[in-house]
Image 1 (spheres, rainbow, N blue to C red):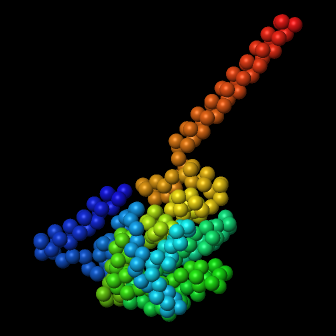
Image 2 (cartoon, rainbow, N blue to C red):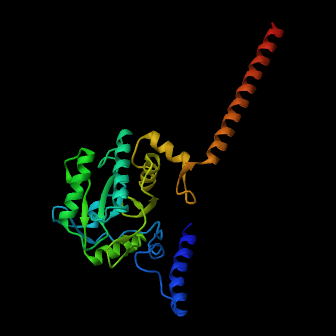
Image 3 (tube, rainbow, N blue to C red):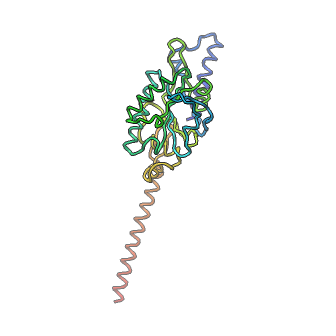
Length: 278
């Protein structure tokens, strides 16, 4: 999957190069072909640069490491607060997923943490504060620390998006941003564990991704069993049942049935022997 993404990225870089050599103009800014240059190159296992400094919605400077407590996995949402299209849908999807997890008694700041950071370095803290207030109202929360909303300078934003492999483009005329729909699941130490794509994040997939990121240290015993039975499929970009587990279970059940049959046969034979002796 990652190799395929790398080849696709090389192809996108090579196409404009070949066009330039042939004297043909590259894709026009704002066109679908131009937007294809915005995507994701997965860096699974990479650690985020935790010393990067951002500013929260209250105006306080904070290092990226403040989002990680060494215990709880983190759902990171990259967005542009002024984007009314895909960014809004991604954030709405994250809010909906958080509410679904609540129905499973998976609560923010208890089983996992979440944060939103703008990947548009021109955005201001008042925009972050407005978006944060809207999200907290939908969740019925009052404490801003439950879901931090951050902005950052160009250097911090570029370093973060570069490590995540999140590529975006800006149309210089209307100022629109082209980017992929994706959220990031990070370990309690700030290591990239999983990418979840799209704008709808199934409760099961998000829970499994967070469990995986925490190495099974959060959640109930049942959640840990669930993690053993489901595995992430990179081709489908979602979690599915592990067939091998069913094969193992089937083999175990057959063994139990055979042992029960043998035990019953032995008991029957012993009873017959005792009856003959008496």
